[in-house]
Amino acid sequence: MIVTIDGVAASGKSSVSSGVAQALGVPYVSSGLLYRAATLLGLEANLDLHDAPQLLTLLGTRPVHLEPLAGGNRVWQAGRELTDELHSTRVDRGVSVVAALPEVRAWVDAQLRALPEPFVAEGRDMGTNVFPHASHKFYLTASARIRAERRARERPEDVPAIEAALQRRDELDTVQSAPAPDALVIDTGPLDLQGVIDTILTRLR
Ligand SMILES: Nc1ncnc2c1ncn2[C@@H]1O[C@H](COP(=O)(O)OP(=O)(O)OP(=O)(O)O)[C@@H](O)[C@H]1O
Ligand SMILES: Nc1ccn([C@H]2C[C@H](O)[C@@H](COP(=O)(O)O)O2)c(=O)n1
Image 1 (cartoon, rainbow, N blue to C red):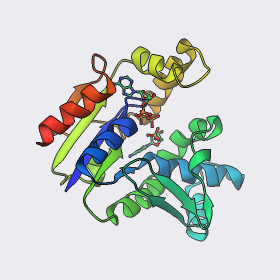
Image 2: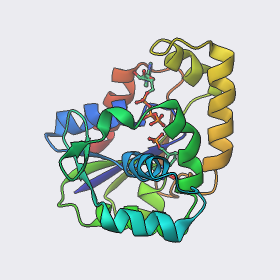
Image 3: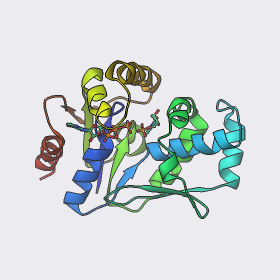
Image 4: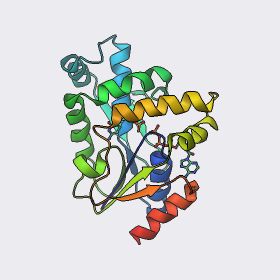
């Protein structure tokens, strides 16, 4: 069984996926972490992030491993854990460029499709492109203002600055982020975190 949870930036994909996965007793898979890992390694190697052949060569020589767990995902490059470095501001700024490269998307998709079922997969194109055969699909939305207010509770930045950055990311992600035709679209604005998780679990049962 594969459940896909896609959505716009900061719509609650990872928190909701983790809650749903824990309730089901399966791992969840955070696809965005692989794009973030490719970006981090590219930045550390001083590569031009638009240069797909160079990035793919780097990823070939320094293989990245995603460890999906119900409570949170970890990312490794050989013996080094990258997880805590993947949400830095410089990775946030570069990741949309890397995620737009078809070669990098194919690299991520191959790793995701090799994972053993069952799992909950979250990202932008899990239900449309990577797992179109998934048994249950969801797509999370909320206004940029509400998402910024939620983020502001965990970061020392003001709401308008976060809102502007989220709108910019939404625009850059538009190409790969759309609900599958058979996905249930959930506006998380009026719901708390547990309310979103319960909506999904009710549908699954
Ligand atoms: N329905 C909700 N009500 C209140 N807060 C929420 C809700 N859903 C998520 N949050 C909070 O919003 C923030 C963003 O959630 P989360 O990191 O899960 O989003 P995301 O879609 O995975 O983000 P990104 O696209 O950056 O990876 C977190 O602080 C989370 O606790
Ligand atoms: N399936 C996916 C997952 C993520 N991305 C892009 C979108 C973001 O720019 C970036 C990081 O994702 P996040 O960790 O914020 O969910 O990766 C994508 O294009 N497709």
